[in-house]
Length: 150
Image 1 (cartoon, rainbow, N blue to C red):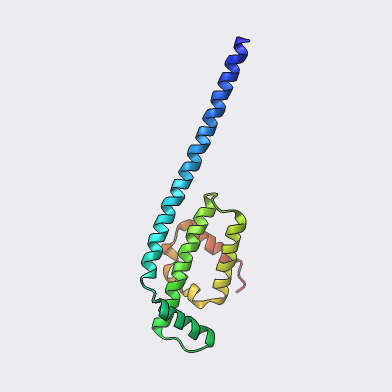
Image 2 (cartoon, rainbow, N blue to C red):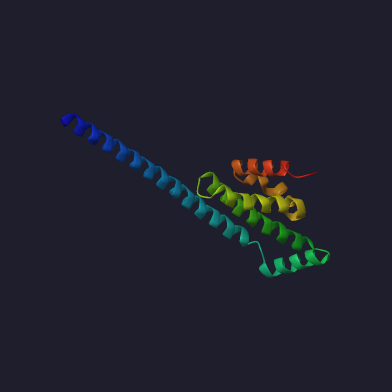
């Protein structure tokens, strides 16, 4: 009987250690995701300081109406895409970290695919700033681009 109690005690200790290890691993992942989110929010705040919301609305209206755009309008539309893609980069990090479900990331993939297919300012932004995004996100975008028809 004594041997069985020692075995059970050892087994319980091992299970407890396993759960503590899993909790630490999950806490570490959440801490990384939180730090990444904070950095991303700072990046977005900085990038948004270059966007004049009123001018962006005007530029978007001109674009949708087929009116000619000024260089400043174009700059505003590219800057808006830069913000969008910072959000996408962070979402991809969250997905890879296991904090987003695949279905959630697939929604972002669909948006990215549509932007590259239909929005010249997304393509221009990527050609200017693509190398400034995380390497893993750059690879993901390359994979998305590979799915587009020429």
